[in-house]
Amino acid sequence: MIIGRCIGENSLIDVNFISKEMPKVGEYVSLKYDGKVVLGMIESLIRGNVSLNGDIYNPDTIEKIKEIEGDEYYIRGNIRILGDIGDNLRIPRTPAPPGTKIEIADEEILKNIFKIDNGLKIGNLISQEDVEVKLDINNMVSRHLAILAMTGAGKSNTVSVLIDGILEYNGCILIFDMHGEYVGAEFKNGAVNSIDPIINPIYMSFSEIKTLANIPSSAYIQERYFREAYKEATAIVKSGESDTRDFLEIMRRVLEKWYNTETFRGKEINASEKSKIMDVLNKIEDLNTKYENLLNINGANVLSQLKLGVANVINLGQADESAAEVIVSHILRNALRSRKISLHNKEGNMYEKPLDFPVFFIMEEAHILAPKNRNPSSKYWISRVAREGRKFGLGLCLVSQSPKSVDPDALSQANNMIILRLVEPQDQRHVQSASESLSEDLIKQLPSLNVGEAIVLGLMVKVPTLVKIDEFKGRTVGSDINIIEQWESTKSKQLNNIKDQEDEFRQLGGDY
Image (cartoon, rainbow, N blue to C red; front, top):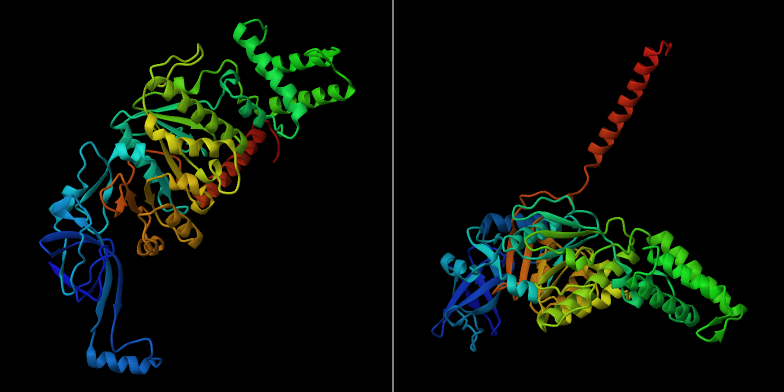
């Protein structure tokens, strides 16, 4: 069906057109010229009337013109050229001539474009609902993904659909669950493997445990004593010589021994040095009070608990930001190291088993774990895995409702994006600066997307597209709380409690 014709000056990647039919933004069209059939997508539309222009300020005048001309209007729009259908969607080397017919793209052609063997179905085209959109899982995992949306736009539903789709292929997913949304989830294609947010200190690097202890690098004397105590405690644990498995208790005993002696490593310990040791002891006491549930010498290596074909979930809902950052950096650091060991056919130490399969990490609240204006250890390791992970089968999915707060370097490493509704201009600009495929016209569509609608682009799809995301059929707890229902429920419980107390009082013979 012909909907219009090209007008004006056109480039290799943009075509202007005029039409009397009303197409839809996001609809695919085809143009035939110079022996080619070229696919394009409508990115913007304007409806106007030559007579009813912006220089008329009298409503009566407008009414008279409408009586004479009726509902005469024109439609002008812009088409983004996506490629030559007959040449594997390569951009043609010649622009479309003015007057070229514009037709709605054939549905069978679109189905063929979005058909991917062993693909993950994410939804259907908004403009042509019979066309399914599938994602290339290999390109999605290896080239990383960002899911960005304002609160309530359908972000959690999108993540759940992706998880269920990956489980269909027995994939390995590790979800850093910041709000406990997925611990009790139910997926069609796999169970949930809940992993306790526990780190065995013997698997930690010194910088990780030092960060938890809040010892700044400028406090070099405290850092020296803490480092030596950490090394000695690790050696004691590995030798099995201690009567306790409490790592921090072993460190405390080591420091107390030094505090009660006159020398340390052959040097005299004066009053000032003892004061520094006492400062470190206090730091360990604070560390134990704050993170006693995080550090456990009996805890297994988190990576050894990962399973294929299930949703592996680490519940960080009870952890503060500092603990969450340490857990994430610890796991990413060890995953990168373990995958390198596995792929190079090397053996790890006695405490670790190489990670023998790829892993897709889903980072909820990416603006906390990889913030723009801070430099926590998690941000470093997220960026490191983003740069190196592709070679070792480690993929990242950064999920955030505040894109402007996400580190731009980490975001730019995500070569795939699913962008749901975004209204905040700063969020829009930040996302556009991180993606080469997101045009100005597509950015303008973000505020108008309905719940569950998204712009999908990157290497996991052949062409950018507007998609209605499938509705997740399983169960999560990520939806908004029904406030009124909870008020009513609490009030009902209170009234029932009062009634029970009255009945109990009467049974005791009281006069209420």
